[in-house]
Image (cartoon, rainbow, N blue to C red; front, side):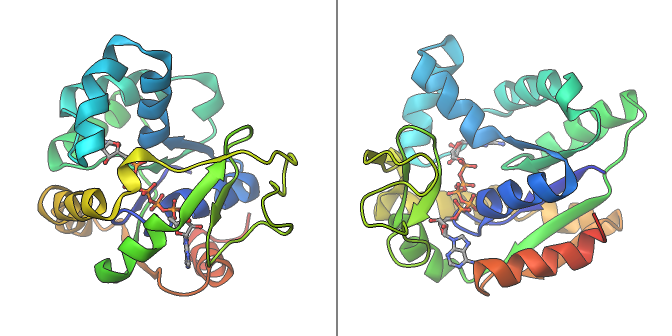
Length: 216
Ligand code: AP5
């Protein structure tokens, strides 16, 4: 099964993809995570992408299309993938269609997490993650069980993303409305778009996604 999660910054794509990956055995592919790994490695792509990401704008299509084209062909994605953050423009969606047709694969579901953009600034500015294992948390909505200690690995060091400042989040939301929202009619016309209410609590959203995807 091949699935895309679409939604503005903070909609919960990454949170839900981590859960669905475990339940359905799909490979979670986050282009944001891939780009941040390139930035951390100081690669040529990372050097090109860093300033653009820090401004909250979209990295050029050709970089993302090449990156995903190489990634979905790897063995760990052969049983199905869960795309989080790609495609983000109609040009990326068209390139994905061509890649999948070339592999005789198809898209099963494109799921839109429907949220209120105004609430996303609060969600994102409260987000932090464990520096050691990457487990994600939120100041109000997903706290660590013991204050200041990662639930997963016990580390006491946490990080916040440089593009999670409120003014940058607003630029990211504008980029979503202008460049990514046109994907919705694109996929609706192909009959693969499903809508899931994303303003509910995290567990409830997971349950609703499970209804769309069917039994694991
Ligand atoms: P990327 O990393 O993809 O960021 P994003 O789309 O802006 O998404 P986020 O990770 O901010 O949000 P999310 O929906 O995953 O929410 P999360 O689950 O973390 O991209 C970063 C940058 O990379 C882009 O700006 C761009 O520059 C570049 N880029 C990446 N892909 C690209 C592409 N294809 N083309 C061009 N450029 C690209 O949740 C957020 C917080 O809310 C968390 O703290 C979570 O705990 C909490 N939360 C989640 N769900 C709920 C809920 N239901 N209720 C309460 N809290 C919740």
